[in-house]
Amino acid sequence: MERAGLSVFEATRRAWPDARRWLVFCGAGNNGGDGYIVARLAREAGLEVTLCALKEPGSLTGDAATAAQRWQDAGGQSERWPEVDAKACDVLVDALLGTGLDREPAGAYGAAIDAINASGRAVVAADIPSGLHADTGVRQGRAVRADLTVTFIGNKRGLYTADGQDHAGIVHFSDLETPVSVRDSEPNSGILIQESILSGLLPPRRRNTHKGSYGWLLGIGSDVGMSGALRLCGEAGLRSGAGKVTLVTHPEHAGLLNAGCPELMVRGSDSGAPLTELLDEVDALVTGTGLGQSGWSQHLFDLCMRASIPLVLDADGLNLLALMLPELAAADLPRGHWVLTPHPAEAGRLLGLSAGEIQQDRVTAAQNLAQRYQAVAVLKGCGTVVADADGRYAICPLGNPGMATAGSGDVLSGVIGAMLAQGLSCWDAACAGVVAHARAGDLAAERVGERGLMASDITRQLPAVLNPAP
Image (cartoon, rainbow, N blue to C red; front, side, top):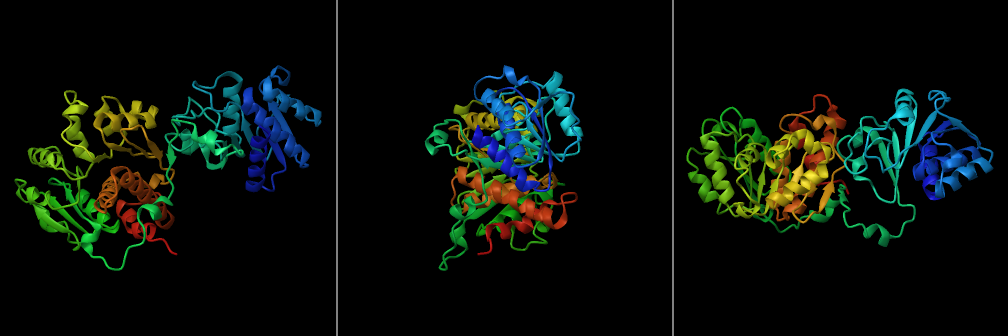
């Protein structure tokens, strides 16, 4: 607990070195104990500290009681809520509730959270913003909106998905010198995907290569009126390193699909005839982007589902798959080695749930999708989740709200498809594709801003992500 309090104190001083007046909110339990230590260290550093105790210090137990006693022994005094003014400070420290909360904060705790959020002051959360569910990232009715969260021992997945990123602010991790053996003993831990995985999965290319060395990606989709979706997917595949990309689409617009990108090879298909030949030659397949749900769409979808090559299934491909429910059982699935890339509404259709129910526990939803369909599932959204049928999961902390735009998912499908074509496993392709797509989106937002960002802006930044400067 001393190390936790020191981590919060030091991180706060680094972030706001000129803040002289600190207000620390302490609840019961270990999170409150962390707050008492922060307050004591700030007072010892010569800062003006007010501590607001929502539970009488004398009623605390264990380490929290020890921390409170040390604060008092150092001359610190405790104010009671609501006798403090949350605006009469430079920085606020939230040490109210910690990670065990599973219901909406009420009473004095709820009122204190509301006051913190209304203060307009810099806010630091100890371990996790009070009111945020540590596992799901769902706001429990109300939650502290922090500018900085200092989290301990292990990154809480709730900080990175659902409502987490809107409430956590910048996340600083401190392992508190916990032995690696202790952290590794947690059986349900996931992976926080970092951009650094790309260099390991996509090493520098050899000089003696050719386009066949980097895979042939086939994209199938775009019914009448939806030609842009497959075009976005195909160009993203090229920008992500596939040696060549062929698109099969509706003959009505096949001649226009590569007008702005002549490197794409395009074929029109009424019956699926050219598709049958291509499926025996290519290395990976993406379908569903703009596919529609017409008879033409269903015919191409059926051909893709019978193919034996790695597949990325997106958009209307997922909706057509959902139409096969509820009769479809995992044992009856027509294929394996595939990546499903749903947004919450599509995930809900595949699991017989609403989008809201999916969002209540995004990690579990992704794991259930992967298990049910024996696939790698990519649940898109704030804190995209990747999961496989063995229960493994990963969360991507990158990306931004500007990526919530038409066509962004089509680009992601093309990126993952290109990774498959280059020989990555479904898991590695999904993780690499998600992080490359998210980082490219962040670069695009730096250049054009979040509001008005287009999917093609993301595609243009992919080479910068996949070919970082030495």
